[in-house]
Length: 482
Ligand SMILES: Cc1cc2nc3c(=O)[nH]c(=O)nc-3n(C[C@H](O)[C@H](O)[C@H](O)COP(=O)(O)OP(=O)(O)OC[C@H]3O[C@@H](n4cnc5c(N)ncnc54)[C@H](O)[C@@H]3O)c2cc1C
Ligand code: SF4
Image (cartoon, rainbow, N blue to C red; front, side, top):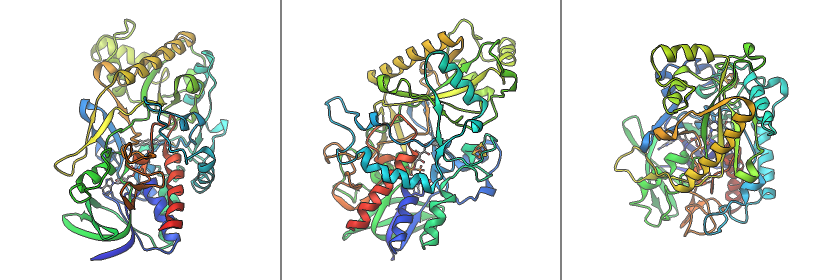
């Protein structure tokens, strides 16, 4: 049987960063990634569903929620919109209903700081300059300022971005610093092997290590690792554990539970006709994350807002169909709707999103096959979180003269998110978590997990940088102790 010192499942932040660190130690590293390998020149400026589907998985959960998931070598670093934030101080102190802190006490701002520094340096993360912000970001700042809220430039991993607007289907200009530009080639230079189109089904314990069973096309294969890093992301990492549960009989009971969408909600803003300077603004141009962040409600309300980019008329129609606002068209077809769209599109609409410290309302369920099944159960606490956000946004709308509608109306049970966290959450005890503070799955000291699934709770900001910092922290532990 083939053997490696370290087998890594998945090649996003939680997989590629350990690949680099473990290879740096001189260990033999093999990364198994279900997706294809694409280089920057392979990415296309295309919204053709066939192409989009080849670079981004759309997993449909119960109640039609659309979950966007990375599926290439580099994981969702290929698709992410560039927002890279450290965990705000407020997020470290989040507690559950019983008063238990979500973050293990050993992980503090000071502990994570050097790992954030390292990840920011390698991935060229910095605060955007004002002259790099697209028009939609400026409009967002202006509108929120009218309601008394401070908005500032985001920290991002873009260098000399040319605002083409195709960030989520892969940056063909190599301006977004995805993992194929840094940690992956760095790991390969040290001998790590990234195997694409290798789907991991399950793993079995073998002495102190594990045999990982995977498929390359139709061919079933296996490889033994002394150490395994599970890094298939917030939806698929728990699914791999579920499929392995017949062999790993000491898995904690929390696998797949507590899946958290980081309080993400999407909105559409319709600006009044007389809003200044709109002629130069086209809602389909610019970056998909418009490079701004509003933290002002975070401490009191637990949510933040950031503007998005390109918006198609179809998305607009879906949003309108869920509102009963008397000033908006009653139907999303016919002449009335056509005239309305002509009036507001493309100069008077833009999209923005919230993130927040909201509880997990979802679960990655056990499935009988290799499909990952996600269920969502709305709770009164989550409804209350959305109600508070609606109140806050009503005030912004009133003070700015804009109209704000939900892009995924609650009435239609709508939800879309790209942040899938905490489904194998880390915690201080095996009674309330899956992963220990040192990063190994409880009861399996050689099985590590430091991807999005291991984060203990919602962050209220975009997660990629915190996943990276935590992965580096766990790698330090492994390098010293295994
Ligand atoms: C469109 C989009 C925009 C986003 N924008 C931002 C942003 O602006 N800022 C930010 O911080 N975050 C953003 N995110 C979220 C962020 O990208 C993710 O949280 C992060 O990349 C997750 O890292 P990960 O390592 O946990 O998992 P992933 O990056 O998802 O990597 C997991 C990898 O495992 C592979 N895999 C899954 N199952 C298997 C299997 N069975 N066998 C082998 N391989 C498998 C997948 O193909 C994937 O490549 C965005 C995400 C998306 C999709
Ligand atoms: S908008 Fe910028 S980062 Fe996004 S794909 Fe275009 S050049 Fe790349």
